[in-house]
Length: 433
Image 1 (cartoon, one colour):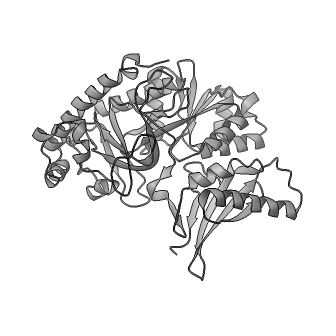
Image 2 (cartoon, rainbow, N blue to C red):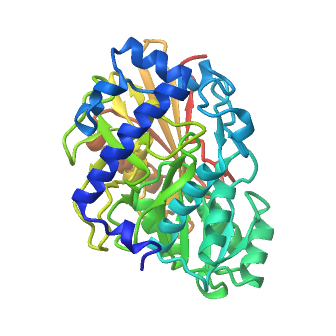
Image 3 (tube, rainbow, N blue to C red):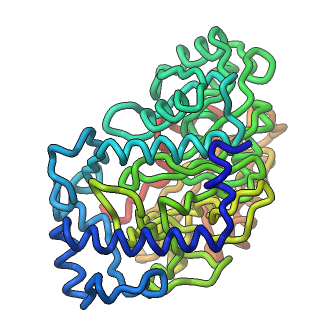
């Protein structure tokens, strides 16, 4: 049930005391060894000798992705390069890539954290884990790889793509656990059906661990109903290390290992902490990282914090499902819309398949127009044009009641929309062209 029961079930007071000590040590560490943070702390009027601990957390400045880009490639490291044993980096598709360095201890903390998480959602020594996240500079594949081996599972390091081979190996090697994006799992299931393979009856797959993109509770239900597996959420960012945290078998939030990571949820506009149970932006302070320690790292991910002890017995804080990214929010006619809100509505409509696309345009009038293309389900009993029009009208009305903005709906045939083997790209914004 636990990988490290002593730490995972640590009394809340003891965990807070540990965080207090480690936070004070972190502030001293970055002030001494990181020119970036020393300068930032001086600008904020902070000196380690005056820092009290958790009660002073809000006095510390935020760290943002732009800071990493401005100090590309290694200007924010707190150790000499001779202490770095590995590099990972983001793709840099939206600007300069962010480079993360790891000491040997950093790798140990990463693997230990994800090992705890895999055990929490029920992975064990008898499992065969197929890793369909990308390997290389992307952190997903290697993170799962080493954590899977740490707990004694057999690992299939197939990486992303090559879907026919994925399905073949899943059958031949009796894969029990798959790790990939949720959109790729839906695509893999679809391709398996075309190959005459039923995931439920023709494979040993019992669990999937899905992340790297926001996905809704309704998508979880779709995956579980189509495949017969248990679907679990995983969270991490490349800057924090990579995949780190999952849900436990209770599926009531993602456990954050508080002995290594201190979490807050803030109002994205004001930077002020929100109350427990309120939605906001996730902020993480790394308590154990050596090469690239991060103080109040603004992840950009929108979630809700829960600090009550979980029914599984673990006492560490939990975050609820990621609702979207602050920078992925769409503003349509002055209304804030997250793609995950749209997905949540669509996945409740049985006539609709799993694939959709959001297209934003600006009309000659200057008003925003949102078109949502959705595929029919293979099993939908839609016979006439009138049926299609009625379905489009129903979807538009359901979305309007949730989003408070009107969208044009286009229902298209199954298999029409683009599939993705990595992160799904759900939004085409043509208003900037």
